[in-house]
Amino acid sequence: MIRIGDVTIPGRISLSPMAGISDSPTRRICRKFGAAFSYTEFVNTDELVHRAPKAFKMFRFHPEERPITFQIFGNRLEIIAEAAEIIQELKPDIIDLNMGCSTRKVSLRGAGAGLLRKPALAGKIIEAIKKRVNVPVTAKIRIGWDSESRNYLEVSKILEESGVSALTVHGRTKEMAYTGLADWDAIGEVKARRKIPVFGNGDIKSYEEANSRMREYNLDGVLIGRNAIGNPWIFSKIKKEELYWSEILEVILEHARWMIQDFGEEFGLVLFRKHLVKYLNGLEFDPLWKTRLLEIREFNPFEECLFLPQASKRFALI
Image 1 (cartoon, rainbow, N blue to C red):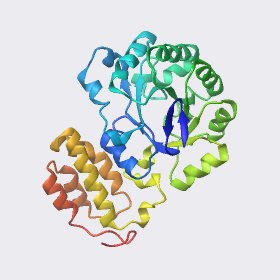
Image 2 (spheres, rainbow, N blue to C red; image 1 turned 45 degrees about the horizontal axis):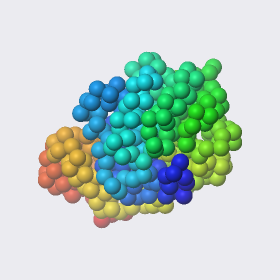
Image 3 (tube, rainbow, N blue to C red; image 1 turned 180 degrees about the vertical axis):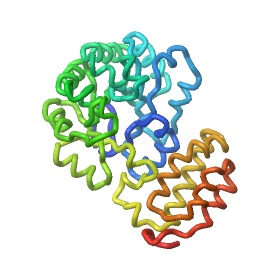
Image 4 (tube, helix red, strand yellow; image 1 turned 45 degrees about the vertical axis):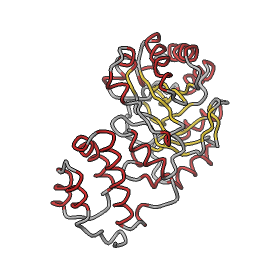
C-alpha cells in the first residue's frame, strides 16, 4: 500500500489517465482486475469555471472506483485554483495537475506539457490549488519539453517544494509524444532525489514488467496506459494470451454494458469501438465479421454477432 497525503492506495499498479479512453466504465473494468486506483480523463479548467455540463460529466464515477483522482489542465493560475475548489464539491480523493499532455492545442498554449517550460509558474499553481482544497494535490509530468530541455529534476524539485503529495513521471519529452522509448533512468533519478511518492509511466507491456521497473528504480508505483486498452488483465498475473475466448468475451460484454449504462446504447457502442479493436488484437477472426461488429449500434445484435466466431489457434477454443 502507498500513502498519497492522507489517502491510502491499495496497490502499486494503475491505469494512466488517457483522453477519450479512461472513462468510468474503463476505469471500473481495470479496477476489477487489479488496478490500484483511478484517474479521470483530464478536464479543461476554463470549462469547469464556466460550469460547462460536458466538463462536469467527465468527473462522473462509481463508488468502486475509489480512490479516485480528478485530473485537470489549464494555463492560468487563478482559473486552475478556482476550478480545483469547484470540483472538490464532487468529492474526489485526489486532484492532479496535468503537466504531460503533448498535443499541440494544449501544450502550445502553455497548458499540459507547456507548463514544463514555466516550472516556477507550475509551482505557484500547485501552491494556489493547495490553498483552495483539502485533498492531496499531485502532478503528472514528462521529462522535459524536448531533448535540449530535459528539466525533470528542476521541475520535480519545484513541485515537491510547492507541496505536491506525489508525482508521476512519463519518461518522454513533449516533442517525443509517444514515439521512441521512455527513459526509465530519468524516472529513477526523480525517485532518487525526491522524498514524495513517485510513479513511473511509459511502455509498460506486462504485469511482470511493471514489477520489474518498480524494483529496479525503487518506485512507489507505475501507471500503464496504451497497453491496458483492451487488456485489463495486465493489472494482474493473468495473461490475455492464455485466456479462453469465452473469458475474453465475458469481459467485452461487461465493458460494453457499462458503456451503454453511462453513455446510452448507440453512443456507448460507438465509444466502445476503440476498446473492442484492442480486445480483438491477436485473435484471427474473419475481417468481414470484425467490420460488421464495429458497425453495430444496438446491444442485442452486437451480442449475437460476438457469439458467432471461434477463437484462433493462438488462444484456447471455447
